[in-house]
Length: 264
Image (tube, rainbow, N blue to C red; front, side, top):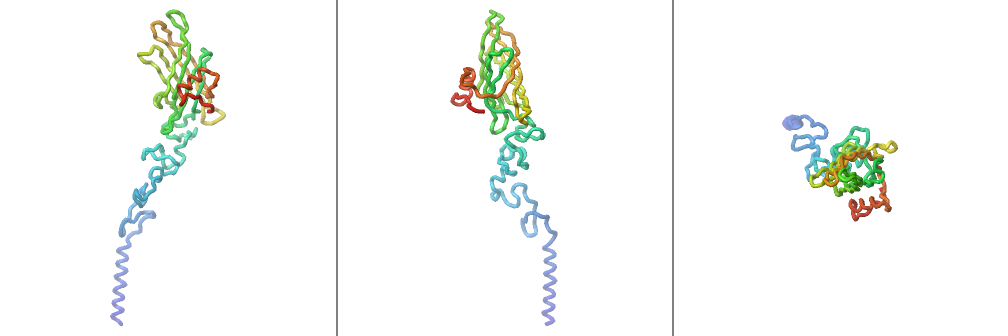
């Protein structure tokens, strides 16, 4: 009996010693168990699992806002904030909400804009504004100018039409509510400098109500020699009128199927 009690006592001592040695210091909450008494910090993406165990959405869109992170070739420049990016910029918050590398720019209405100038009231000028779906950069996709230039050679007035369609987002981007574009090719006698600034709409925060700027045009053709003319303009978005030949010509060059939009 005494022998059995001694054996039991030895067994209990050994059990306590083993337990003390094997227990060690408790790991911080949330750490991952990687082995007997071994732990590690969870991975910021996979946690305690592996890539194969993590849902694909969590890998590319950590804040679950529907837009993939830039580190996974998406557009979300802050994948910890579900409010970034958004479709539209939020004015006044000093944040690049739509991840287009601009802060607090205006959200310009896309579609057909008609420009006019008091110096040439009969001229018809049109531009189309588009938003790149991937970068959210807004740009002028098409433009058409109709203007009159007076020749210094023969005194005649020449009515000239200049247009560009299918422009790329990098050709005339709208950056910080402004744009600039120049046409100065060696093989073309007509030279154009086109600049503008979008004006905020006081009735609709963060959007534009009109665009203002100047177009400077000249013609170096030896038979014309029209010096530069500066034409200030103002423009607003509008639905092209079916009775407006200039607008219809613009739509044929700019829009798919050559059909003018019937709504903005």
